[in-house]
Length: 340
Image 1: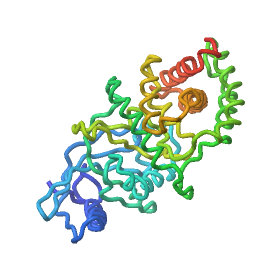
Image 2: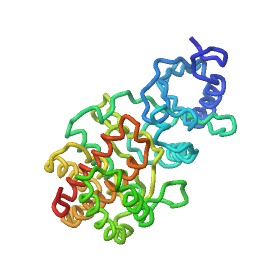
Image 3: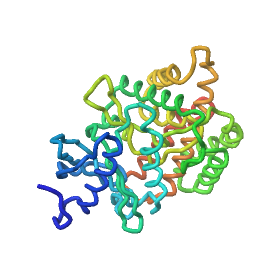
């Protein structure tokens, strides 16, 4: 069935979708590209925004599997509306990353095939290469997580020194100071048995925020968790990092801290750190200092995420588990000097 504006339950604005695809695909080709039809395969599982898996049939006879991502904040998935503000910045940021940064890095991120940015009409779309539905977060495969950590190291290495005039979030001293104050104001929402842990972590944050701007800085994904890494069927190009709405500039170890968070043993976390270290730094780099700095960022990020979930909708089904998760991260990452 071909998409059509009048077909209920199908991709909206089919003709506009075809126009956007033809415009962008023609820019990538020597010759003008014509789209014959767009066929939906399934409704995909997104984390914040709705996605649809589609096949784009070209007049040449080629078929391009794509993901259609609707970035209109008014059409966010129901659970996302409980925890995300209604804003255009996230959508604008993701389109910017796919247009201006990711194509030149050759790091296996999904290819941009088309986009449309018409906020007044509500048409905020991304059309991306479909690399499959399998998320790293659904697996507990240390080897793949090590690959993801190494991927982050390469991404950080090649983006050092990129221009700073981009619409990205700033993760700087002021950001972390504000997040620490925010958690301090919400201590009454922390379970009584965990308050001493959080209070001591906040005391550490006062020291670390003064040092954070001196850490290796650059571009970061911002939410480099397993849910935002897809696993391709091709083992030679296994990983594809998606969902760039929270791309930022800040201490680059933020992404390493994110991918290593969870129910990993210390030795497993260190294996991921080693994979990152070898991909990001020269052999002469100081391994001990590197780990000290990662520990510092781990505490700042645990406080950052704890504040996010403490201030979110308490009836959200993930609220209690997410608060517990970041309490557990505080206990793990700073266990040496913050007793339970």
